[in-house]
Length: 344
Ligand code: HEC
Ligand code: HEC
Image (cartoon, rainbow, N blue to C red; front, side, top):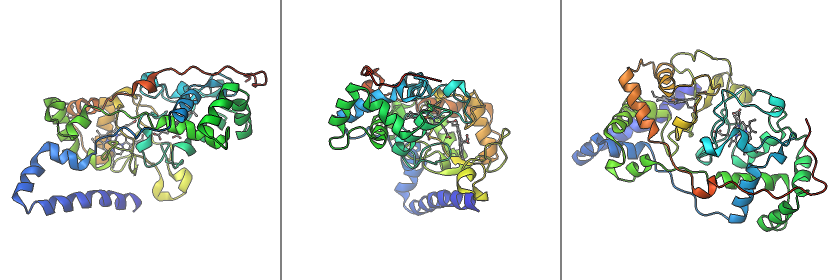
């Protein structure tokens, strides 16, 4: 019932709106127009309001600092490489002592627009999320929050930077997470599609528009809509037909509600061309194949090759640009005499 309710909750208002505007002739013309339909279903991605540079710069350093891992070899950027779309392009990631994780690393780009973090939404926001990997024994593997604080405090340059960024509280585990999250909030990537949504009709090519139309006509937009082209709801992977690699039970592991079996956060499709391989298990390497699987599992449709190709062309228009400051590699402050040495 859970997913049925969600499905209707999404579809019903759309039908209702379509019905209401149908009364007015001018609105009928508008409803036929691809651009106005898109403007109703999606929202342009806005760059965030400027944040305190002392925090964002500190967060950028921490994001790239492998001293936040036991081995001294793994940083957030190891698995969320900003040079390659905020991912590691691996089926599942390599963590501490080359342990292989259970899920594909989603991108940190535009993560701030998601309703919650992780494939199963178990962290409510970026700050809560950032506290996880540092202590996860399979990822960065520091033994405790206290150890992470000790490492950061032992670096004189960080002592100073935290005093400036967090006057009063200085280095705390919470502040480490807040700084990283503030940096991540700058990883926003508007694209040509946003220009189109803002009114520039020629921002998309004819093929991309055909793909956008297919994406909306076939029903992809029901789940992948809004500012993130996804990221705003949970849905079962396998609404109509099961996913062939079905193993991970998704949100069920957290909620224990049988209705949440195989339910995942609907991912944002921004920069999707760069964030292969696809799905929570990273088992699908081709975007064309991923689109075909979505048609079958979520909509009960066998999409034709030209329909898939058009959708893929549209999806590529979601490749956006990071602000230059986000792509600049930070210089990390040098360790102090008491900084713990890397170990395995
Ligand atoms: C060893 C690889 C690895 C490291 C290191 C790592 N992550 Fe991740 N990250 C993952 C994986 C895998 C997931 C998905 C896990 C899940 O959903 O259960 C994830 C999920 C996320 C998400 C959620 C994105 C979304 O779409 O829901 C964010 C944000 C994130 N990581 C940021 C970070 C930050 C910040 C750090 C450093 C403090 C970090 N990660 C370190 C692999 C890694
Ligand atoms: C009923 C909701 C729903 C519909 C309809 C839907 N999707 Fe999805 N989509 C999801 C969910 C949930 C996932 C995450 C699946 C997973 O890996 O657990 C997903 C994942 C994806 C992915 C992989 C994203 C990634 O980061 O790995 C792509 C690409 C995608 N969808 C495209 C489409 C296209 C194209 C359509 C229309 C043909 C579509 N989706 C229709 C819910 C939906």
